[in-house]
Picture 1: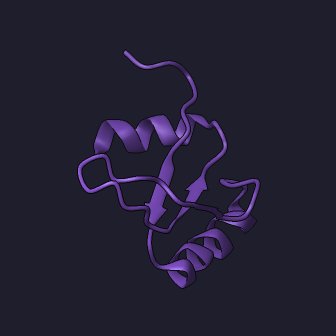
Picture 2: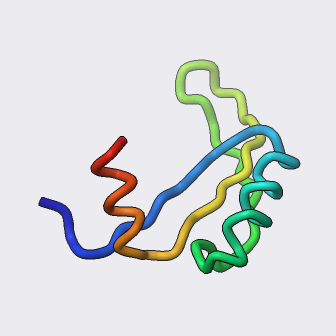
Length: 69
C-alpha cells in the first residue's frame, strides 16, 4: 500500500512537449515549477545527454495514476 500522496516525474528529450505538459497541468494545480533541464551521464558510454524533467506536486490523484499504471 502506498502513502496518501505521491509525486510523478516525467523526463523527455523534447522541450516543446514538456512545455506542453506543463501548460496543460499548471491550471489544474498538478505542477509547481516549469520543466528543468538536466544533463545526466550514461554510465555505459560515459556520454552526457540533455533531458527535461517535470515533477508534479504530491497529490492523492497521482497515487491513483500510479496504481492504474
